[in-house]
Length: 243
Length: 387
Image (tube, rainbow over all chains, first blue to last red; front, top):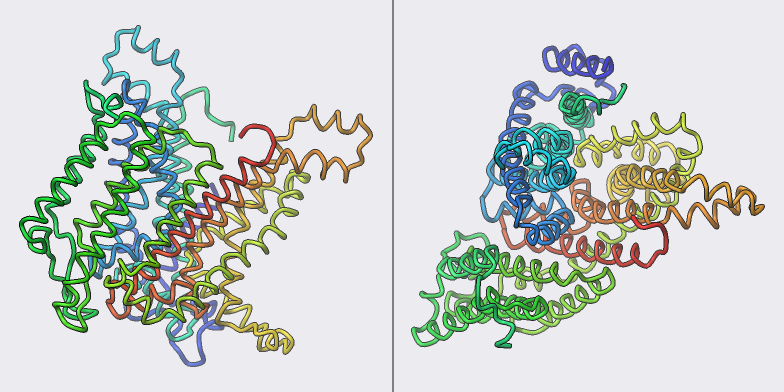
């Protein structure tokens, strides 16, 4: 927890006063070259990066969860093998390939990146929601029905709360993957921190590569920790770990 | 055949897929461009077929779709969906030939939105039917190889030759082969190195409980560094090595090229291998270890004859993750001059040449799927506790 807080403060300090970090990054920049990326503000790029990921993952999470709920309703058990087969297939698709394949269809800019992140985000969330919802013990469901809960209330009051930690776990995985994949979106002109990395690779300025890469990694670690805290809070009472 | 037709209620999911396919027939089947990077002009089946043949194609499609929706036996649907997929691919090639000849020497014909949708939906029909068969991993591998052989035969025939992606391939057949070899070298080499280093590390992490959290924590942190930056950052240590250690430079180790890409892929590969090795070894029941000791096995014998065989399925699951992941990630290596299929992807993105992007992006997808099939079959062959 303390480490996460320190990391958050470090990221905030770097975004607010990048110039203060010049001495640290100077050795990695070419002689006399710029040390801090200067074609756009790092804070602005970070906001655009996180915004892009959030914009892609929100519909991704809603649709994946909706599909998982739909497939796990009574009478649709025959759809489960198909759902699992599609998930297994999807997970062999490399994120770079998904992004590249979106470009011919959607052109350049933020749209193909958004679509690729949306598509790639579906799978982990769907898979873990499926595991969470189908993992609710049958006696629990019977008890809920016996208590007179309608199917809708049973879903909202019993199944979703019990499945929440796993659903959040899948969303966390999707978010971390999307955050990293979004950088590649800058090769097709999406506005993300990848822009800084590409600029660094183009002129062999490793200070740029470090800024872009470590900022993205720090964001991923922060989001990882954030979802971890959420999942811990969502755990039903009694099942909380003693950490 | 008649007996296997369901008379009562068609399956809802298959009905939806069938209706989707019907709709896709109305979408542009192919697109024609005046040049390699020209704007695509979509053409529907109605536009490219004379009325008589259009009617025949639509009647055949409707019959096949009806059978796919109504047929009860999964194996019949597997067979029919594969035939339909081959038929659509052949149809794209047949439609492309005359269109390309008519539109001039620089014109390109590519599958349109309708054809892609049709292929995707038919693939779903296939997946649905194949999942009903509940095949074992060996049978899945066999089916996969049959499909691969069919695809290879289709690619080797002249049927698809007029398609834009095939023109792109013929223009760079030599470099396609060398980049393919480079891609396999990057993915396979880093995989082998990560196995050699990762399995002993996993063993260490399983034996020394206090070592595991910092080791796994560090490896998890490595995973969060975006691949582009990771490839870029590897330039630093290897560039230094090349500048300060002449033997390294003589071996061809440089700041850019294959060496930093191999190192980056290796680092990404460590977490799944170390983590799964540790999980597998920790999963060996204590009672079995005790009886191994009671039988008089020394620590070394116990490891090789008892623990590793029992941990193998979990260990191989980690290896499967790494192999699939490396095949995809190796594509990014092209950004630092490491070669591989990414060369075509990033060249294509730079030239806004969609077919070049496809030429670079489709092979890694196919390779990753093949690797997954192979590893699944391997995991199933290994005796051990059920996963």
